[in-house]
Length: 436
Image (cartoon, rainbow, N blue to C red):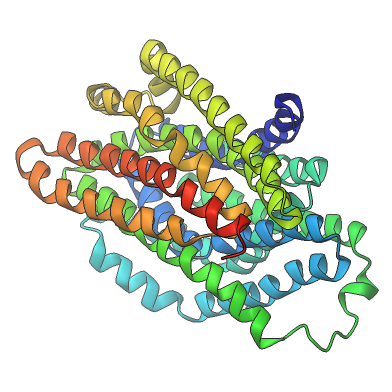
């Protein structure tokens, strides 16, 4: 394993994953040209609702990728196929459940978010359209995770980039040219989700013939196998719940400071998402190589990937810190020309400068754990991080308001990185001494 080999996997993953937050960034940017903060705030809250639903099930992608990567090490075609089919079954059931429960979900969100009436009206428009994309999104998670885990880099890149470019083009056309506002953003996203689902199915059937997929396997529904999947996924679910509690508390509190502050926080959060997904591209590469090393029981490869991940994370952190420090105003102006929002966003940009330093290793090293499907440290790290966030949230916000909110977020991110670093030795000992 060399840096060149790692980057050959990581760079395409960075390109493919970073297009995902670019969707939200384009949503924010096009709505930021309509001179009404309510549009930006409404979509920001709507995005949090769907992040809550889909991030809870983000383990479908992550765990599928981990099991698919391990099947590379075992070189078992049946393991590879089951790594796809079992999570897909779970995805179908859960997506239909979301659609059936769409009204109670919407009512619950209305209770949680203390938003202005015009903001909430935009949120409802966005939600009522995009809830129908649930099957496309969740099955798409499984498709993407399987392609990534099998090191099908070109296919992964094609899937992500094609879907997201379509979304971006439709965003600009429907909102800025047809003046469809929030409707345009929502329909653009829904159409791109459907396209991504279709592309994913097509790419998978090129790797696994349809007659193989539908062949009868007596042990497909084996209880022990599903228990292992759910054991891994339960830890991811707890991890994601912690992330979502933090995110919902952050957005809800920002909304209570007024729609201008909510919109400014939305701009900074979009920048944060873009940064995070760059690290996530590295995490995906680390996940594949660590999963392969675990499948082969090769501790030297594991140590090498750990070292490479660490050094490249430090370089990426330095690059992002310098970019935000020297180009913050230009970055904010990309998203909105509403002067009041620009002024507020610039007031809080300092916290975003600290973000890469705080979160870098927490995101990249998560890939090491997921590839090994050793997920208890991921769960524990997020529980500890959430505790820190809540503590700072209640003590700092009454005195420092939105600055206190951002302080809580940065300390949450920093705690996440520290705990993931701390648990690495324990994981190595358990996996390579046969305890795990």
